[in-house]
Image 1 (cartoon, rainbow, N blue to C red):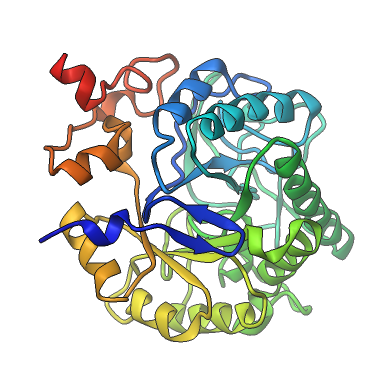
Image 2 (tube, rainbow, N blue to C red; image 1 turned 180 degrees about the vertical axis):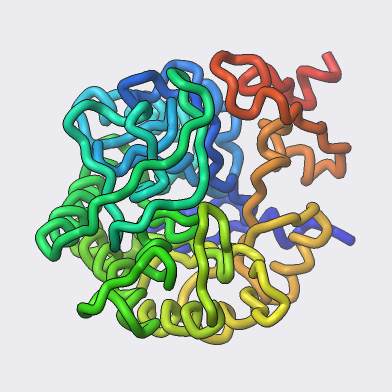
Length: 359
């Protein structure tokens, strides 16, 4: 099958895509200990600038939002300045880049957070999982503090400021990380969220936090520069939901009328939910789909109108020139799983382009 549908330009709100091939956000753990992007990250994203849109890796809006080691943030002047080097490099090559804002909530270790920061969650329920720390190896997650209404308002304000910081850093927009067991999905989860106020209980209440974050960021930088990523029925990081289809429907209802730039939807982790079809039917904006696509199947999704673009994760690890390879029908390189999260350039910026391979 031809992949021509993937190579057509598109407009998602204020975002201007040269093609419909999107680089999905991927944590690669190459920031420094102060959550500042490094020069290796500048090279990494610049190498992949031919993507129609790059969604930069999960980036914390605040010190409280950090959870993993060597992940970036965007709340300090130093972080903003370092991100500016990334966005300048991508723009110099004609690319578009947004940043995914990721608040880890209860999925955190004190070994990975700065002194004085807090670990927060909708309720004081720890996640039954472990994560890696550079200091102590694998460690259990912290028991979170149950967020007060003041904490919720402050965290929403942190997201709002992060969106403004992203624009100051040169990003073309922001994406709300609303899956994988992080704070917005913790609010949606029945086991992590045991509140009895307007943020807990019914599905409509449990999606309220995500909607209010989106509204705050949209007010700050314009809804046409704001997207959201979600994966229905995702149980990662100890998420439990007895009726994920109802939660997904409530989330889609909450997005109506917001005029967001796009919805970035992952394949549902449940046979009871057709996430792509439901999003196409109930979301009134551009739709990016993700999870396990090859060039041919991705092109079919766009050509058939089931999606407006397709994002690739693992293929972008070893193929910095993925767009050019797809356009030319070239074989895609395989990535080395052992170097996904290890510090340094190996398995990060040393994958050659097709032209470099031929030379």
